[in-house]
Length: 250
Ligand SMILES: [Zn+2]
Ligand SMILES: [Zn+2]
Image (cartoon, rainbow, N blue to C red; front, side):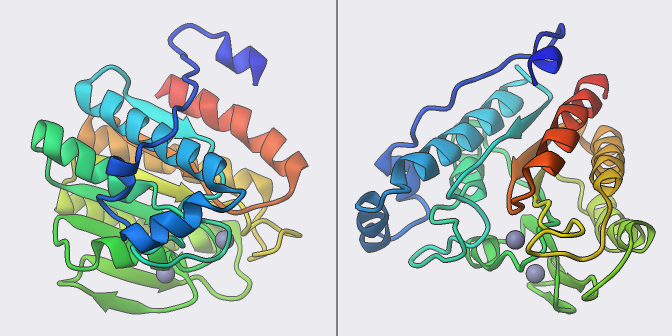
């Protein structure tokens, strides 16, 4: 990462832990109490803190896009329960914070982790100003057509998956016109990973490029990538510096 990070226009921010007040905007006191006693609390609250800060900097116009390396927080965290290695919501507090501070309204979320984003869905279920398109195992449309699940198939390929992103997310987000795009970016869909869908490492670069272009077209490039599932470290080392390059050049 060092080489990419030393480029002009790139800043590395060190996350600060999210405070209780921020977490309680989404989670119940009982859930927060439980998470605070667990070993993963620090990592999870740093991840949320990073997302809240990145979203606020984007809202202020200080930065255009960002990549947050998240651990122990993300799309499986519901208001009062969580599973799957993510125990606090990242996008929930991030959206609520910039709505309160800047009166911003509409946000789009694309979830390309291999698994269903039940937590994100639960947090925004009744919020018609959040478009949530989740690529998982279900075909489902709910919440006035703003909460969508797309079955990507047990095994697919790069082109077929990208075509689904274009048809199911890009067409909808163009009509929806959000302030910014959040991306729950799992790479567990890669061949050989635990959510293997048959995708190649280059798929993740193509996906980033395409979403970056759509963000430029719709919302002045405002785009926040939040890392999700995936355990192949070689893969991560291959894709993330290049993903940063794509964000820098956009
Ligand atoms: Zn889903
Ligand atoms: Zn996953």
